[in-house]
Length: 381
Image (tube, rainbow, N blue to C red; front, side, top):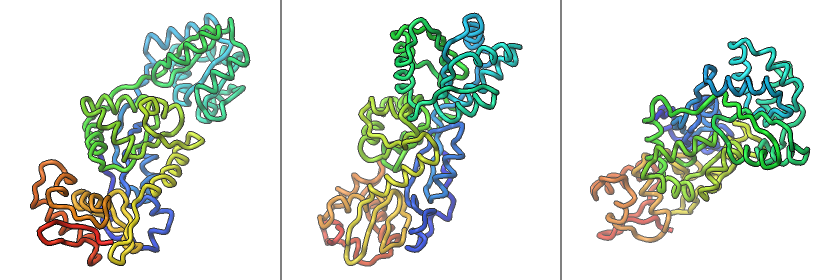
């Protein structure tokens, strides 16, 4: 796990500072599964106060020397496509760069200039235009479904469609185009591979199942399956956490699709942008916070912190786990044995007492954690 949190995150954040946009995600821990743009996304989240866990699920491997890409390029030259679907900017640029290395860049560019070019998003459009080409249409929602519907409406029976793949084959969309009468040439410009170091991803699996992250972000659909593969026997536990306690945030509908097939609720911005993804998280996470009035104090629980009378106070996992257990049934006395179940595995009842002591010190709010002699602890309300 790469935890980009610095020591300053442990300091108390005052009510005035907490009201600023830069602290809108303070107290929350967010997992980032992206690889190529992980630093950009992490910086956006950290600029709003979040603690970020970097755990790339996949990495992009260019396949400029791959026989399949060269064969697909030759197929496009031999039978110029009527329609070309450009899915990603990096894919379009990689295709042209590979063709340049084979001495085929100009013939390929000439073929593309005669085709009906569909750019699935703004980055694909930018790559098309930087190559001196002109795109004819883009889907408003940047989804494959919109592309298929648009092409069907245009009529594609007997036409050739070249589809630049988004890291891996998308058979459902290829089949939909073929069923509408098109001949499809799949163009594999790059492929997904496991991360060079799998340890951060396995650590993220543990954090998700233990509910020690508040949200997980996905920027590519294959990352979802990569996370579940890394989870192995724990994949059901990961899905259960994502369905209940851990917010799942995706950059767009294509990325969200495999999660929705697993019945995981997903939040996604209307436009597939990292900045919009962060704004969506800023809107959604605070809605999940638990707020209580306890012993005359206003108490709000965020991921790894409590807001006490307007001031955010970060807490270690064990004290935070005790606070969450007590806040789930305010006023009810929970025994040490009951609280033991909320702590990380391997703890004993002495660890409960230590966690309660650290919780009281961290909250600095007398009376919030009440001891009931010979019975346990509670939040008095």
